Image (cartoon, rainbow, N blue to C red; front, side, top):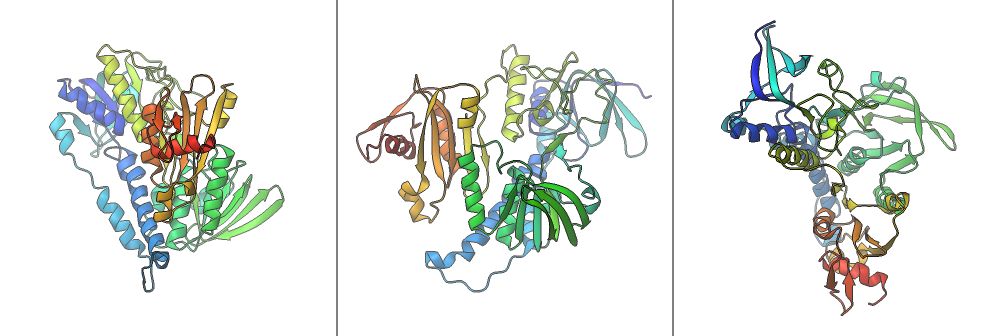
Length: 461
């Protein structure tokens, strides 16, 4: 074994949180190294967030063109060029090493495995190895798409989000396994590109973490676009090859049926990248699902070892990984930040998008929290009529006793931007004037639309 090289900070994985932590440590004068096996900057800029939103916008443009006549625009025949769609996506994900070089952190593009506590063996391309030790270790190893244990599915070569975003053709019939974020976003995009699309969801509803009325509205919107949805459905067996011809035996409450398609997209969840890298040797414990066990300060069971982002069981959003970095950074400087009771906003980029921050009705009920619910259809907001996007609704959850904003959900145009305004007011009461009348509506977060929401619930205008 070669002589160990000592670093003050050693980061395994260059995802968002680990990347910013490495830059911060290096700029603070600490000798820092980052070991990354593939994606510089992690999955978000390379294979997940940015690439998928890029293609989703291409699908939005295609949808607008197809409906141009309703806006008074005349167009000729429209065709989708998936090669150009893919190229636009590829052009956006190009990464640069400039910030790593500027920070002073050493980026090592290799696979690393723990061979002892706080000791990482890195295999080099020439067959040699480097052994790195760190005074402080930060694990930022992420997750990957899970392939369900269904007979014949793995042999069928299903698409994951990575392969789906690299397609240079429009699938004739795309069968999507899973009705969560990835499944819903890509299902709608490919439907707008021209594919026939069927979603198969094992649970009782799509968008399983949301309230039934939210899931129902998304299903109605998708059905209006011609997307077929099966819920409470179990895939029993798969035959064929994705990209050519596939046949699925599906069991539903009404019996078994055979579904035939051209391509399969597996979008049933994520698996942490914790297997086979020696975490047991490093003294790092995992939970029953394979995620790294951490406390509320993101400290693992091993001394001076932290975990960041998805591998630590943090919600699977890039902004959460970045917040993990901020918490660790501040705590290393003497702070006392924790992940307890974080208010985490999120947005699903369907069209219209779904955004939520805080509690849902169901979560409030499970926690025994008394609350009142106010709801407003997007059609009551006149702006939606000017752009022809009246689908969806806004819903606010307000504490029954002290008028605190407990949660907000919106399905509608620019939902993420509206939700961000509500987040600033969440957890505390606020009073603003309704845009239509003099009713002083509480807890609408400073946005006229939310004022109307509360006002409409009070039947004042």
